[in-house]
Length: 362
Image 1: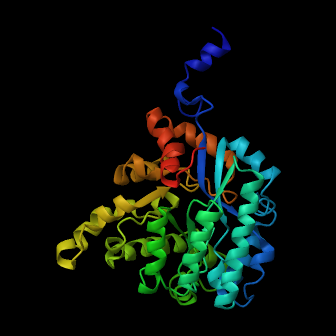
Image 2: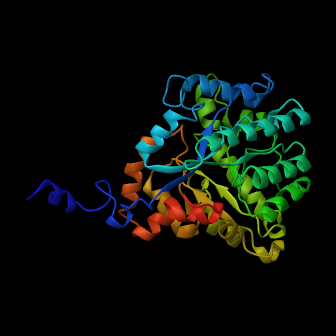
């Protein structure tokens, strides 16, 4: 028996992709892929709580896979994409420190515009490999509307990303002052990506501080638990405050396999009775119809299966969370996902769901 025929008998999964997907037409689109622009982020006050946390985290990653890659938007990034089988990255600011942490509103406006121009330059240098999500100056909602229009209409961006609560002060987009911003997303028919950010100082101190162990406190408050919990709170607030009913065409993406929300849908519907509370729809219906779930580097099959079961195959999309998760980990996950999904469904998650949502072809 030849080596080739032995290989063909090993089955799908960790060995190979099914033949239907061994085609140039199969191109993985990764939708939560970060880039850093240190010169622009230097405009944020060094005394800002979020800036201090982010600086500490990045200093710990300086010599890791992340360190040299976070600012690389050229050859190394594309090499990693090729090794990971990624066709297109949708770029966004490595944004737990962002324009809402600027020293004042005007500085935030200028910072957003400069960041978006920088992202546009990266996309223009490699338009077949990159798209971008905009950064918005949400300290001034009307300017955020203007910048979203500019980025989508003039720069060709495919949506925008908002990281954490506004300014890390516990203000969320269900506040009426952001109605015009959410309406702009509906008008332009582009998604809003709700990404984690640094929890407010008071929340950090009350929930996540472990005395005498600042590094463990940071892990607990950020990628270990806290910032995922905050995104979930943000999404649920948009539902239970009636914001999603008010903006029924708003499309939202959340990462990290749904930020712990998929397992809670039955609990939401049992607790937040939509007739008692006056919602037009149940919370589960609101979320399933208006929220898409990105995998975001959580390369584990059980949460993927939970997301698919709770949300449906058409609302799950791929994300690497590069460079915080190495692109080289993608192939084994995608191939193992092929063990539990039909080829057409795997292609939906890896490619066509994102193409339909973001309105471009890889």
